[in-house]
Figure: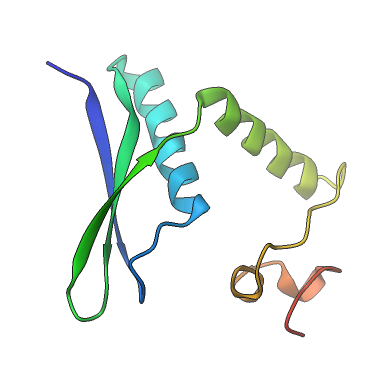
Length: 109
């Protein structure tokens, strides 16, 4: 009867939330609200599990639907070549990017 609260389980080497986790949950929130008309809470949980089985729940504030749509439009503009992407904030993010081989900003060459 109350709001739906989203939860995402992530298996990773550290108990940490990444910005992409918040974006993913926020996009799920937008899709769920638009397709079901249910109210989805403005917060969610990212549960991280490390290889040793330890779990930690992190409460995160979700971004607005407008912010999700803006990110989708930015991605489309980058892929269409209308705007240039910004460099990754860290070598770790850069090293796992599917576009690394063609990126002029690539780090850790």
